[in-house]
Length: 483
Image (tube, rainbow, N blue to C red):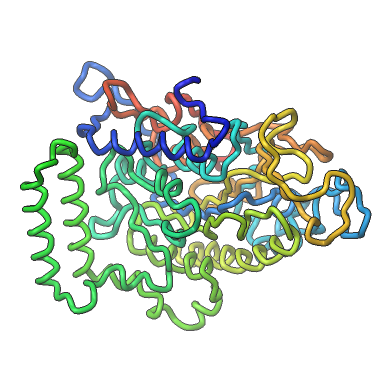
């Protein structure tokens, strides 16, 4: 077995085992140093930053492109419909861009597509075992898991390389994803981290945006002075820890700096940004009352107050939301309603406040979906769908179910991107693979980094070798999407 292959008898367990080993190694690693700095080498020149902040709208679970931003031939449900004829289960609608159509159910987003670049040709590798957590790890870190080191989330790269926009506001904030009790908690934790960079560059996790205000207040019954005492005792505990040799000095100091940052935020005026009750009622009503809607509103408030990178997720929970293995059409219809208004409102709000030009908003998912193909054409990956292979007999099978990595949509707003632009294309008939200007995750990350003023060749010394912002430093920005 190759070092990073997974045991085919239980790929999920083997994946988690290897990730745990990498996480333990990260705790023992020394401070990473910028590769080339002071070592006779040269650090790459940073590109001109077009954006100061980034908001990632994460459609966790596999958002089907033919049901959202890349409509194909529409076939309404009827008993006996051949599955091979089922490409889109929603008709296409016009947008604010002449000739550009997206799926019914996204009427509000359609009205702001003239502010967007739509990439229709994003592709993911077939990783053999097509697991949501495995592909989400790959998307968020840029590296195919498992690795010998704990890879930083793309938000942690922003925090480490660019630093905070506001020294009081956390540079990296993660909204809406519960990391406990959802069936794949440990796998999600593996990439929702700063990895070898250390805790101070990791995310501030806010699983419930409605309760975000409580995250910047001392626990009930605890005064600020008592909180400071707890911090002092925590430092003493680390200093006296008999097992501290298993935790590098860098990781220990990073944890202490993270606590310093938390204490500074508690007493700051910026802490009010976390309290959604302070937002005017008409604004709250305009976003909506869903978990995701409140996350979008919170993201806008945090970016206004100096957050560098904010991820807002519809939340990945196995077999829920975008993870449509049954009842695909009705589930996606519900997801349309959940994301349509909040996304459009977020874009308009950023624009009206003069923030959109310097804020890059990215909407993406780990892969798309197809009714017949798991992975890519010819893949030997295990089929995880429940839909019949011949004809539809029940409405619950109407919709796209299988994991498809051959062609996915990504939407980019603001941050120096072209407006009303479509990049790439997928085939009109199955297989719906990218047929024009395919964009890999490596190059997509290079594009995001470039917009933020970070070279995709930026690297740090880890285990006496360079570890790059994009895989092996080979990410190439997609220049065509920049204005």
